[in-house]
Image (cartoon, rainbow, N blue to C red; front, side, top):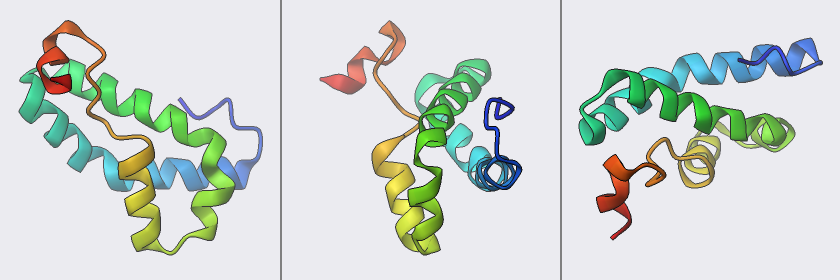
Length: 88
């Protein structure tokens, strides 16, 4: 997923962030969708958004980075009819 990132350091950084957050986000997404594959897809899609924000994420301490990740690229998005109830 992160092979599109040309810089090795950036690729390692976002991969480490993905590994540290993925399980928690997938569990939260699953709690709403009750579908593991959909939950995994939602989390992957959210992390793709963060690729353009690597420089900013590096500049934040871990607490601010966590908050930024949750606000900017949350794994739960009402983008499918299964989740349309979330947008109401």
